Amino acid sequence: MSDLNDLSRRRFLGLAGQTGLATLAARAIGFNLGLVEILSAATPKITPFSFAIITDSHLFSIDNHKFDKSLADAVAQVNALSPAVDFVVYTGDIAQNGREDQLVKGKKILAGLKAPLKVIPGEHDWYLDMGKAWNGLFGKETWSFNHKGVHLVGLNSILVKDFWTGAGLTPVQRMGVMEMLESPIAGPWGVREAQLEFLQKDVAKLAPNTPVVIFTHSPLWDYYPRWNFQTQDAPQVREILSKFDHVVALHGHVHQTIFNKIGNLSSAGSLSTSWPWPYPPVKLEYPGSQMNQSDPANTKDGMGTQTISLGAEAGGTVQYEPFANSLTPWLKDGVKV
Amino acid sequence: MASNIKRLNRGSTRAYLALGAASLGLLGAASLWARPPFTEAQIADQQKDLLEVVNKGRDLWHGSNPEMSHNGLACGNCHPDAAASNPQTFPKWVPQLNAVAPMRDMINWCIVHPQDGKALDVNSSDMVALEAYAVYLYRGQKLEPGLTLPTPADPVKSGVGFPATPSGIGVDR
Image (tube, rainbow over all chains, first blue to last red):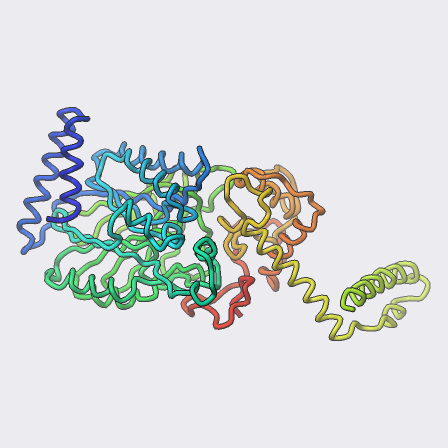
């Protein structure tokens, strides 16, 4: 039984005491379809469904900070989606400084989601205590599950080589280095050997026509290494996934709409709920995937959430749900991934 | 010793500027050519001073002055490598200020609004350092007052990884 189904069931049972009968019935149908599909996984067939991504909230240890409200707005926005999403994935950077109180605050706000939640870490969550608090609150950072005929995988992509021991840095100094996007100290990060082995084993028995969705904090392509808009061992990840007809890769970290396609892998970045990063000086294959220049006077511009719909056909659609009017015509009808 | 040289250099500069202004009409442009050039050592010293200020600006850009922010945000949160700060486009009409303004006024707007901080004295050494950092990263770019699209700083090649010997001030070359 997958992690998600365990989580779903717990969530479902929990909801029984909280929600109306109509909601319960709708949820029960959805989950039953999911179970049926998993049982017939030998011949993959997708029952159309959708899920949402919320990411990069960068919560500070300051009460009533504006980013707390942004994350709460994202939760409300996702809860209001109709039809409801089957689950939500958070692709890293709940905290700004890796502090447990920031992660706890994020978990509390995200607990307002009606749908089950899966989480992977970002560098801002990790480098104060090397993931101890994060693991305690959110469990394992490497996971996979099947849902309605689709195989979904989450990896921790922000693992850097040890730059702190030799330099004698304190945990706070180590975190400080990782907090600076353009820091020249830490170097490129990746998923590293253990997770490559996990992935290899995880997909070994899946048929090539199985639809696969993979979540990482950073893009699985070489976008702009200087800001770690990259995953160093992404080529190995792509190689392991190369047997599949189609793979959808979804990531956070870039705080912007972005799209790319490498072989069988379609990749899309996510809007943050904190602030938009500017586009780096890179010539893009798909320049239309850049959102509008954000207005700094509008505290909601350039931020939001995204909903991903997967249908019976290979791939799906990423629909960005910005808080303000940030989308170009290219992005408005959703991005095919 | 070095500071004596600096004072000397600055004193000389002022003297020559005054001389140039006063005597230009009488003596003609040829008098300016009589100015002795700085030595290589003096120029290196001046450049070192500049880079010290640029480095101070980089630290301020990333939050070293707590007065500049009361919500934890720093310039670098939205402008890594000073990207999209566009120093080569100022002075220009700034929508947030509804006026033609120099970069320092825009910096102060960002300090007061997104960062919820206390505006800097526009003539303070901190403001000079912030401007120096942004301008240094955009060095060599064409002046284009009024340009409104965000521009990147000194371009860093994509796909080549990190520099073997990082300069620490955001330049990979």
